Length: 289
Ligand SMILES: NC(=O)c1ccc[n+]([C@@H]2O[C@H](COP(=O)([O-])OP(=O)(O)OC[C@H]3O[C@@H](n4cnc5c(N)ncnc54)[C@H](OP(=O)(O)O)[C@@H]3O)[C@@H](O)[C@H]2O)c1
Image 1 (cartoon, rainbow, N blue to C red):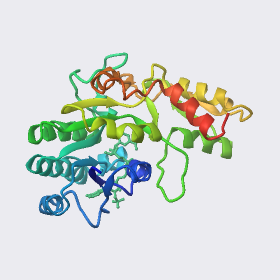
Image 2: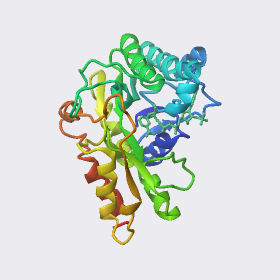
Image 3: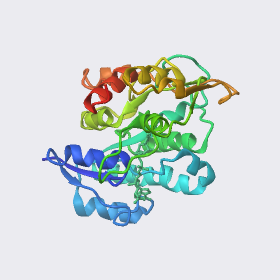
C-alpha cells in the first residue's frame, strides 16, 4: 500500500479525502497541532519519521476574505507552508501534490475557458499567494503537481466541516425564503467536492506543473444558479435568485478554466465535465430531483 501524508485532513476537502481513500492507502493525517506546516524543522522531521510516498497537501488558509485581512498569516501558511513541504518532498524523493486555486486567474481579462499558460496577475492576497506558492514549489521540487481547484460545494455531512458554498447558499435562500444576489459579471466553474476528491490519486502520476482542476463552465454565476434551481422540482427557488449587475465593476471576473491539459496528461482519467453536469449528478444522488 502506498503511504500518503495528508495535510489539512480536518478541513473541507481533507476530511472527505481521508474518508474516501482510507482503505486504499496507508494514510498519515496529522492534525494542525501535530504538524504545523509553517515549521520547516517539524516538517522535515515528520518526513524522516514517516517516510511517505506521496504528500497530498490540503492545509491552507482557504478563506479569501481572511487572507485579505491577514496577509502575513496568509503568506506564512499559503506560501511558506507549501515551500516547506515542497523542499522536504524534494529532499526525500516524495511526490508532492497540492491544491492551488482558480483565484490565480482573478486578474485576467480574457474571456472563455482559461488555459494554464496564460500570463497571470491575481488581484487579491489569496490569489497572489497561491501563485507564488506554485512558482516557488516548482523551483524547489520540479515534480510537484499544483491543482488549481475551482470553488467546491457539498451538503452538510456529519463529522465533516462544510464551508459556505454554492448549493448551501441556495438551500439557505429556499429555507429562509430570502433573496439571493448572484453576480452576472462572474464566470467560474463550480465542482462537487466528491469529484475533486475522487480524482486526486490519478494526479500522483502526473508530470510536475500546474493543472486546472474542476468542472468547466461557460455560464455566469447567476445563470448557473437559475439552471440549477430549474432542476430542483417543486422547490420554486427561481424567484429568490436576483441578478447582481454591480459586483466586479472594473472588469468581468472570469475564473472559468479549460481542463484539457489534465484530461490529456491523465490519459483521459481526470474528466470533470461541466458545472451543470456535476450539479445534476449531485442533485440526483442527494434526492433533490
Ligand atoms: N474550499 C474550496 O472551495 C476551495 C476552492 C479552491 C481551492 N481550495 C484550496 O483547497 C485546499 C483545501 O481547502 P479546504 O476548503 O479543505 O480548506 P479548509 O476547510 O479551510 O481546511 C484547511 C485545513 O488546513 C489546516 N491548517 C491551517 N493552517 C495550518 C498549518 N499552519 N499547519 C497545518 N495545518 C493547517 C486546518 O486545520 P485547523 O482547522 O486545525 O487549523 C484545516 O484542516 C486549500 O489549499 C484551499 O486553498 C479550496
